[in-house]
Length: 201
Image 1 (tube, rainbow, N blue to C red):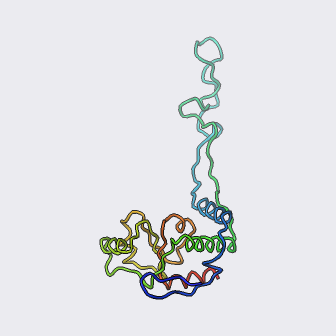
Image 2: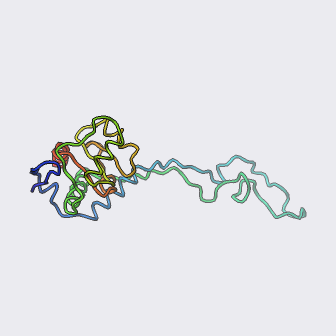
């Protein structure tokens, strides 16, 4: 199959297994959920009534004081007491093997092509790290909500896009399924397409 280059009167020959396969929604969902779960820190921690510092002594006698009965200063209704269902550190990570991960990326790229949300260009960049220059370039291409994918890290492009809302820049090595589905359009350079094919072969 071929992908038409937007900035040149030519097309790029690509593999149908990477850019023309059926959309596997269940697989993409599983991989996206796992990716998001793996990004969670899970370091929150609270103390139960058994763990907080405090005396085990009964604060006052059971009867005769006129106050409500109390057996511990560490109970959850007391200030400084333990938390009833205390949150503990958790490992939220989910295992996703390489075959599934690559399969999900192939599905996403294929669906982007089908929905005409994948824009391929011969090259893309800015001469200086100027947001104004990048904004004008994207406006000329009628692109707003866009992920720009380059073969290598482009410092000027990264700095120019940093202050733009709904614009992100990634190299092929930094691609992930969540970023690919988060934007309306994915703008990819021809060199990046070749690298993506090699990565997902």
